[in-house]
Length: 124
Image (cartoon, rainbow, N blue to C red; front, side):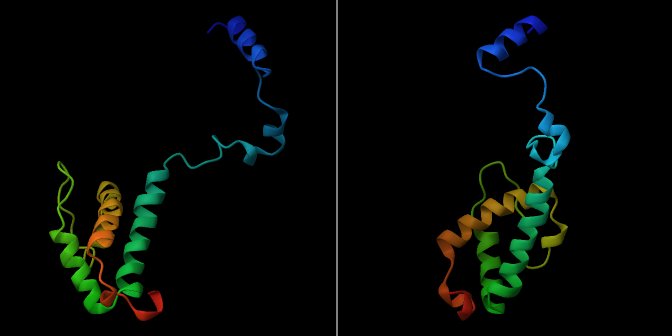
């Protein structure tokens, strides 16, 4: 849009064409520019690995972790997805795409195959 067309468009919506002065006073109010530019790195490589590590080392018993890992590796992957390395042994060598796939894969494995005998009693 031309500058004149933008001004008319903004006015029709009751908006100004320049940023609010509040952005200069308190930049954290800007929900777009104050967020990390690459959330998948945080979510997949950080949170997914943390969740897997907690699941295997804290929530599941040793035998449960081994049985979970066996089911994780046996469970069918979405078509077109490569197999993932063992979460028991290779969790921290997963790249961004593997960690992302693992987050979805883990949910499916736990939803369909989890046994209460795998889980430490305080987490049941």
